Length: 286
Image 1 (cartoon, rainbow, N blue to C red):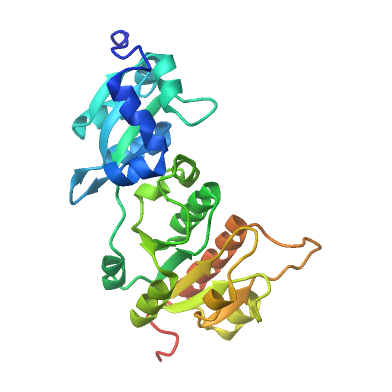
Image 2 (image 1 turned 90 degrees about the vertical axis):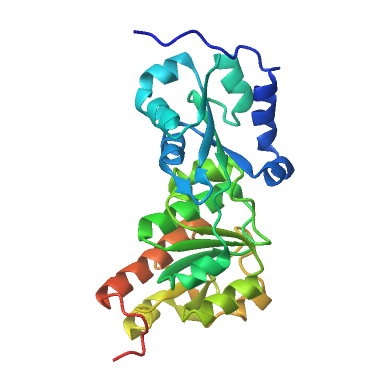
């Protein structure tokens, strides 16, 4: 049995216009709503809850996508989201991708206060300082999630994590772990250090080699990695805040690693060291 005909057929509809405006950062900040596109992101949004309730509040879906992803539509309705069957032109108007997949969700902001992250005594944290490219931000968030990090912190100098490109690049990981936004880097480092977390700055010109850090056994305790701008890395004043500035060794002829690749290497190195240490809370404990 096929779903009913689209109820939203005009991109000029007020509901469509309201969703389309969420592509702009100032509107997202005012409404505290953002867009999640595609089956993976919408599925994760429908399953996600915060203290304010369900994260997914509205779903625009084509007739074809509603049939193909009936489980996602059912999950959206179970989350009390408003579900709109929409014409292909409507989805194309809301979407920020070249080839829309037929589902666009409107979601509540889900960032976590930085103080709550500190109170949880995290063992592995990714700090995005001065990261300006939304695709890189989302990919680092995905890497942090995959490596088992317990939180991600974006400083006030970094891109908006709710940028549609960042949401897409996270491939659902935005909904998996606590994310704090707009934290000054000095406050982030001081707070994490006060919570017993060793802070490492990742920099290609760092004096400390990641392999040496692993060999010395200094990475088994709680660790936060600070990652910088894609083009020019971390400024000197940010590097100076860290307990160590660590480079990923280049054993071949490549000039460097891109941000997401370097982040994956660093985060997985910490994750392995912490597992080998049995989840110890401090490298100085006997």
